[in-house]
Image 1 (cartoon, rainbow, N blue to C red):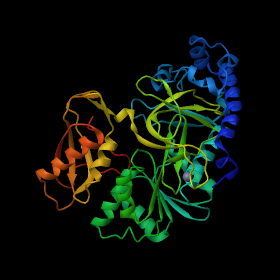
Image 2 (cartoon, rainbow, N blue to C red; image 1 turned 180 degrees about the vertical axis):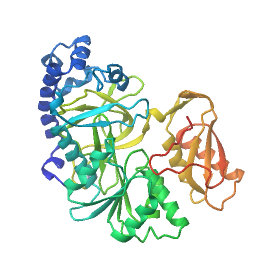
Image 3 (cartoon, rainbow, N blue to C red; image 1 turned 90 degrees about the vertical axis):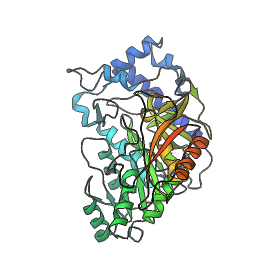
Image 4 (tube, helix red, strand yellow; image 1 turned 90 degrees about the horizontal axis):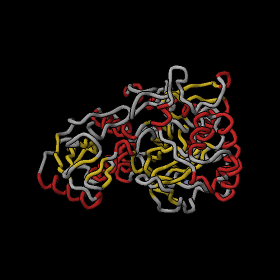
Length: 433
Ligand SMILES: [Zn+2]
């Protein structure tokens, strides 16, 4: 553990500390945030005192990304939730804008430090330790993932940045510099397995013992993870952040049973029913949408921010000694389809299909029959065959039946030849939009 005094603190004690931080944060919001002063007053809460503590948080309104975007003007390019003075801001990131135009994420020096602290705890949970080498494939460009790279310095790793989109350079760095760890998206990790196999490169025999995946769901799904671990000959753990809240907030430990909250102290976690917005208890086995609240953020803090991430929660004791709840990401609302009332995440479809390896390559593409979220069954899914495998009706039928049994969704499975679906060196597109 990077900070045992924090990471192994009893969770009840954490919540007491968070309650104090939260009340101070509310004071700050009423004093500095035009956005929250207006929003909370409109909801009948006129002061921090009236809002109460964390136990009353669920009575406050949720914050949605589009609301923030609506307050953006030429004079106020960040939005009305900006609280800090220009001179206090040391960094302005952009979110990659999966659902619209990019938006700006400003940070004060303290915010940035907290981001790096949380991210360092999350990545250190994977088991990487001071003195080891890690090769990274994220560009330290405009996007928040750049801040994660600073956390490798914090852990004390020797960081070998290779950047995105140069597989040959990455493989050469692994062969020559012999890093113990690699950090990349799960899609790229899967691509590397194929790429090296085709060229006779021994990835399994490489120095890499730990593969840290982040940036999209999938790394925690058992069948997909098993494929990655088999291909790399390494342990695979995942991390997850939320652009507007913080980078790599969550990181999985060596127990591989969900991601711990590395950003404890800085962020408070809630779960809601995504359909009704009603608060659900954060108990073992609960599932729902993650809602996050900044506890100490200064530049553009958010209250009850809807992340669009659907997760499953674990609260049982973890053998690693970290006491925070753990989550496994089931998928993102932005990618979700509703097929006759059933929520379908493309990453979950991929997980079921991957169970048919080695006959399939693990690449899929959901091809919605109509625009929008709601779809009529059967949902068309292209499933790519493995190298040298030819299509047969029995396999398509078996996949269709498994998808129906596991995800309760009726699909039409079209087997497509190996190599016909796009590979990604960053994030995969699992749905044709
Ligand atoms: Zn653990």
